[in-house]
Image (cartoon, rainbow, N blue to C red; front, side, top):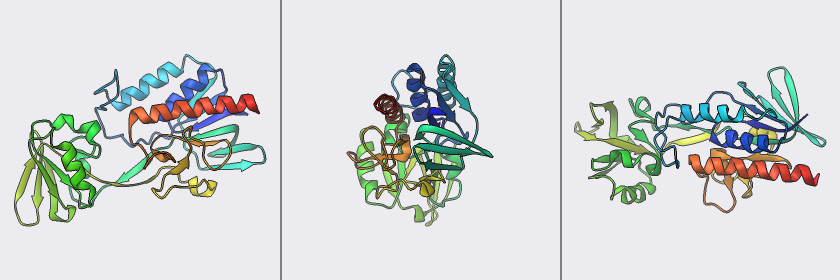
Length: 277
């Protein structure tokens, strides 16, 4: 019987494990090895770690957690989470694990616009977040390959950063090719636009295929509805990181710093619930 089982080994899950370990709570972290930023080599906008490889951040996190004997980490995927009377069960292969609380920290998976060559540049010269990747294109032209109304807002945000901002509908781009120092966007009219980088708005889905079966309430955004401490509509089930959409925010916050903060808050709430129970 664990005090908490954390599903997901990204920044939110690792921070939750660290916080619970420091409070001597028996904790299991299950990591499938699938990460949203798996193709990213430099993570930015994270204090004291600006520009560090996300894989290195995960390695350092595990190294720090290893100092706390109450936390166990397994490289394994979860197939189901369920409530049985006063405990939660987590299925891993043929094994059923039991816990007082479960933290969903699986993150989400992105689906990019169907443009040949775009996926090969994803996480490097093609990005989603201007706060995480915009500065790296400073003083050079960028493209926003996005036909939505949000494209204009993103363009204005990037005006102080880039030398030029080009708004392009994904339907007008037939191929994206990497160049020596940027990208070449081949357009339907035969022209080629060369830029330092491009921003797209991918659609996303939960990596936790068991969420629907668990029955947690979702927001209109598609993310799991939570309160500020990550509590979901099911008692003792928490959601943190990219998967979570707190009521007080307009949408999920896709940010390393926000994920770390969410993981810590959920862990604090679990410790408090254990004391109250």
